[in-house]
Length: 219
Ligand code: DC
Image (cartoon, rainbow, N blue to C red; front, side):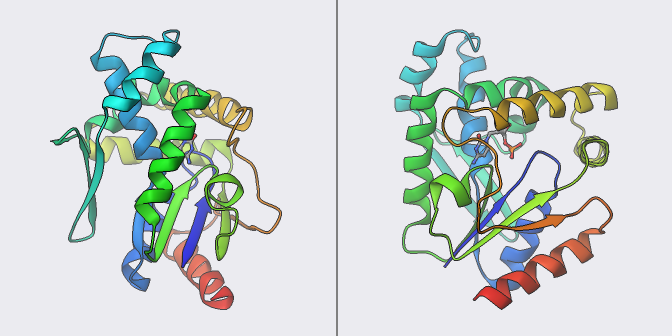
């Protein structure tokens, strides 16, 4: 079974996916983390988003793996744990542009499909229901207004000790929204058969219950 959860940054995808995976015994695949690994390696090699060909080439050197420990996903890049590092502001600033490079996307999509093969998964991203798994069993598009999303991300970052002011986060989210919606391949959009859940005024519990209900109805 494949459950696709798409939506913009801060819409609650990560939180809901994690909770639903636990409640319903599904494997949680965070596709954004795969692009974040490419962005991290780009920075580590001293490259910028302008160095497109070099970024395309470096993807072949990457071994990205997820490990599951209790309820947490740990992300490994070439054997090194990078779970926190891929969330830092430097990575967050360039990840949308890195993920717009078509050959990078094609390789990451291939990896994401491989990771899901033969498993019951809940996958979160931007293009899961439209591109990665257009035949997903359940498609949900989570949304929320941009100020609310920035507020959530700011709070989450503060809790995790990740730097960045509220204004910086709001600006970054607006830029990423714009970039993510205008991608050549795998743009952020609502799949025709997706159910839209607006989480702006919902608590985490309400949002998770609503998503669980939809999955159960469709199953
Ligand atoms: O969900 P996130 O913030 O970790 O995602 C990081 C970036 O990766 C986001 O700005 C867009 C990109 N992304 C994507 O293009 N396609 C996906 N399926 C997931 C993420």
